[in-house]
Picture (cartoon, rainbow, N blue to C red):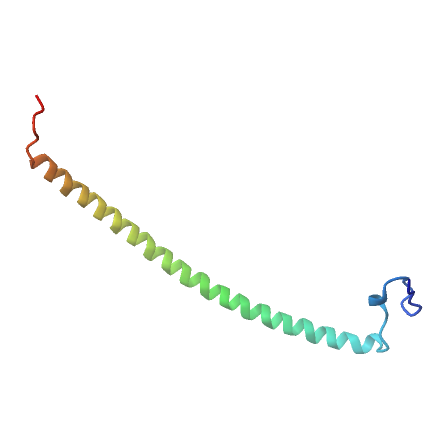
Length: 92
């Protein structure tokens, strides 16, 4: 098994310290965090737009549901009236 003498941790070559010092790593990490934050803000903006559109669509769907219910009730009433007008045969 290979042991790394530069990291101080045996058996973990991924934990080796690079030749660059901590002062050069920090700005790179901050730049990476800044790019991730910008991406997160863009995604949050997209999410906000999607939620706004969804709220509008939910209201429209609610209205469509009411209209559909009205159509079912009207159809039921029309069909009920038609069946009441038809003479039924007396099986006796």
